[in-house]
Amino acid sequence: MKRLVVCCDGTWNKPDNENVTNVEKIARTVQTDPLATGGVHQLVYYISGVGAGSYGADRVLGGAFGFGLLHNVIACYRFLAQNYEPGDEIFIIGFSRGSYTARSVAGMLARVGLLTKMALVQERLPEAVHLYTRTKMPEGAFGESVDEFKHDHCHATQVTFLGVFDTVGALGVPGFERDTPRFHDVQLSDQVLCARQALAIDETRLKFAPTFWEAPSDPSDDATEDPRVKQVWFEGAHSDVGGGYAQTGLSDTSLLWMAREAHAAGLVFDTELLGFYVNSGSDPICHNPLSLIYKVDNAILGVKEHLPWHEQESEFSHRLRLLTDKHALSVRVASSAVSHYQEGGYAPANLTAFASQTSGFEGIIEPVVRLPEAGLNLADLGSPPVPPALAGTVGTPVDQVGSGDVR
Image (cartoon, rainbow, N blue to C red; front, side):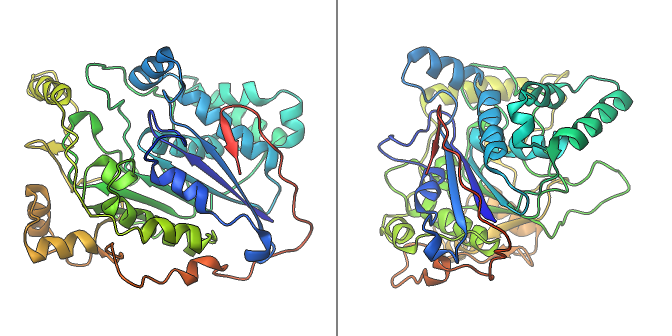
């Protein structure tokens, strides 16, 4: 067996940015030496966010209109199809719009399965994409055609770990109203064994509404807990949680939490490399991304929310994210944010309201390491948490050519 790790970066984010995101940091720190992983190959595939190209047109079309999102989903899916063998484990990581990409990849795997290598050679990829994106077919015909396709051409796969930083379904770009294409399937399927999301308490841009994993739509099912899921609120704005600022004290905290959760699911990290990031000693500064253009955009969206024909519920109250959602699964608050709140000096209105609603966060505090912390021990992340099953031969990775980056 081997572990296939797919890393999807956010809008305008790429590996040669001066300050990289937590997605790139995870891609860089996954252990790729099989001698250090109990003989298991861990193959990493990284893809830049939409709009991250060097041409101005790509930045505008990709960043503002979301063009390229489906391309990124297909590229990640193709990588998995070219390298997957039965028994392999799949890990998918994303940030921001890359989180939406990551969740869409998992959704495509659940809906149409993962093409076998022979099916890929037989040019079945366009058909798989067609079945994935066709959401308006009659239910019976759609289900029958998908089931037949999955049986004839695909592996039935599971996603061992799906970890995302602050998923935003909207574009997050002021002045543009184009919604994410409706076919992107971001609901949590039964094929996902472990799902983790780090969310930003202090994000104030209305364009950056969080996209939760939600409970089943069956009105008879009131469950808001799922043992596979944790959705944890962290201190900071969008990129304080997903990374990308020079001051990384807050984003390092969510990075370490995500790395530990992925490790618990089986992923092994190079602790020396990961330690370089999380032991940086950077100040935990909460940034304010609300520039003038976003202030104008907030004002416009705020007016629209009060129009009589506006039906969508807002995820914000008084320009702060609502930390409660009646449909959201397994919501938690990071202990680092709770500690700062209890010490004083950090009391955003949404967190204060959430504390009142939950009797002081009773039963929903997620233990995390609050960075910087002297003498932090990462030794446990450098070895497999469980003995790997090494029956059969380990597959040979297939190199990719294109926008993705295999490591």
